[in-house]
Image (cartoon, rainbow, N blue to C red; front, side, top):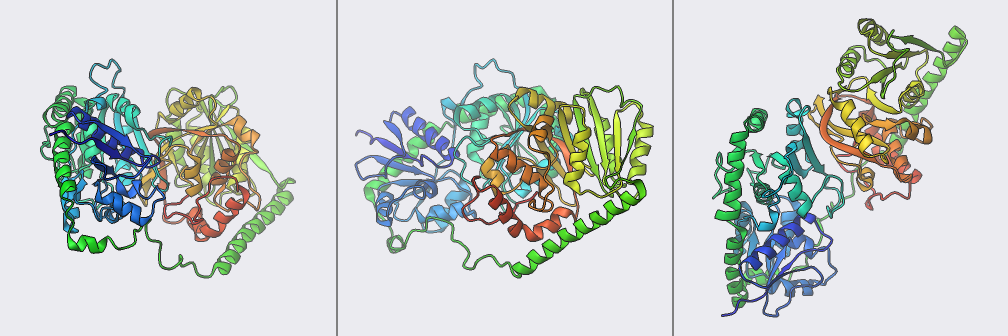
Length: 628
């Protein structure tokens, strides 16, 4: 009996991860002797072919077909679900499985959840296909010590931040992407297909973290298989449903609080890591290849499609209208007292301006200059020829600024100067800085002590004006850098001469652990939320060209950094992201940003009005994870 041709359907404009999985299945079917092709430009038809639909929640949603057409396509095809149970995407998928005689999932947990909903379910256990393997025969060195690939979640950020003491002085690639928009390809840090396999073949260890606390040990089969096919060792949180793979033989499991020592063991013992990577490679390519599993799936699919038996309950369910998107809230977001919030914001801004006006008058009386600045220098300052000027703006941080300066002082392999602006602190901040200067006379430092409080953007502009280097590293007085930060960011600017700035992932610590600046420069993401912190190395010429930080009334209070990034985006400029944790961001229970976020919706409207040509989200609302 001649086997039917195989059509593997996947969305052309959908998630690139799904296109990879569809390509694997197509290749595996061809390995088994089938005529197989990828299809994305039409719906499945009852033409005698065996039709498989990868990620139905994307394939059907991104098309413009009627419910009747979708139901007809479902009856002659087998959906392959790829999402984790409990997520909106998994629930959305189920609606497009109604009418299909067989529903497939790539994970045992997903298959069980589908069966619990009344569908006839089949589990497709992923294995590798030959095209994944870019390690065998490669002469490229494994120059990446640690690799992470995955979407940004609070849980992942928190756990990765805990690895900062291990990762800052190693070559790490922490490639996190954001969920706010579809991942189609071209987003910074996101790789698909051959580019991804090349990256895995250059990496020693891939760290895998579950998306959320309620993931129930979901084993990310797709990521694991492509990693193992490239002889990259896997370190993952405890998982379930990974059989026939074996923990301790093909990969290492460790709880979040034990990840750091487990990672060090893998990195420091080459023989152990190589032995495990080789065993995993053989398991997914030789012992349990995808071709064997796909052949079994096709047999089941052909029988199911030929029988075309659908339960009465599923026939009734098929009459329901298809839901093509996540259901919106039944009520609009509850934001009471909008006018009161706007008045309160204006009052706070007016109060700050009034205080500064009084300060300028006092400085004029006391010093004869309303912008009086007192200048202090270390002996090393006059003759220094810095490659990087590190600016630190300071207002009432006497208890923290010493730690910040100490971290900068420890920077290696780079000529730097430190420019401190004390923005009229009311505590002993100035005394702390001058004491540090006395104790570190060999470090080129200048302190500009302002007799009036200028506000953060104006204080930064004062610091920039005093810089002598062509590269300006912006620091807040409570944040820190690791010793390699300045060198690596400066190298990134060298390697990307058209980039306006370079920034790294930051380890958030203090009141709330996590990550900041964890994703690459992408203007649509910047319009969703400001995910890039001020701690960045900016070319002096860029700041001069754009007039530095804006301090006028049209800039939302506390969002000066976001405003600068948006101005650069409008001008067609961009930043380069170093995907390593090279700095530390101190989180506190109360801050200027926390106050500003009370008025986030109103202030966001100001930015949209000022930069209307940028790709703002259509819904116009501020995502929950928006921050400055």
